[in-house]
Length: 205
Image (cartoon, rainbow, N blue to C red; front, side, top):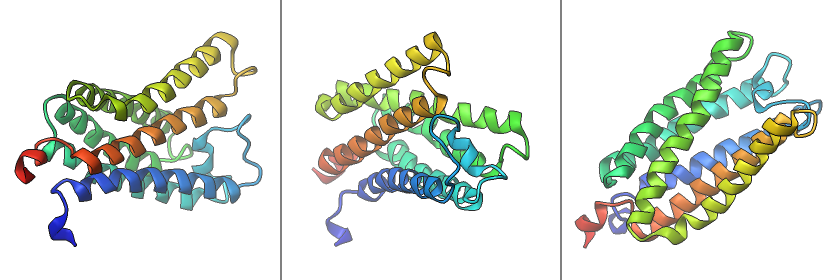
């Protein structure tokens, strides 16, 4: 079975596992926390002291960070040009995601806020580098769903900044952003499994 796999297959699958783990884990955490509301809370509240799902959610963040680390190594090992830069950014981001789970708001609100914002920012940068490389390599069709999802993210955050949180809840903006990130992981995984990450094509040709 494994001897027939492209060298990057196991790395690619880790992207899918990261998305499923973080997405499914967040959903379960919400179900375990009946008082959590998308209009009044952020995802960070799922890991706070008052959350009955705090241990589960924080553990999910740490496990997801490990999957993201493995996924990133695939780009460092097999990626080309901009994808390698993106992989390096996501590698750092994987450590930051582990810190999101390890540092709750009660430990240090400012530090938790910092690592949470850093995680989102680094992910955006890393994914952007990889998307640009995919387009340059002619794999634009795998980026198209991500571009559409990204447009929704720009719109919702634009509305959030212009209309205020009372009209566009922070939790709503977060979950749309999470949906876009989930879309990218699924598309990136499918593309990597379908045509490869990069240099492994030369190895298996």
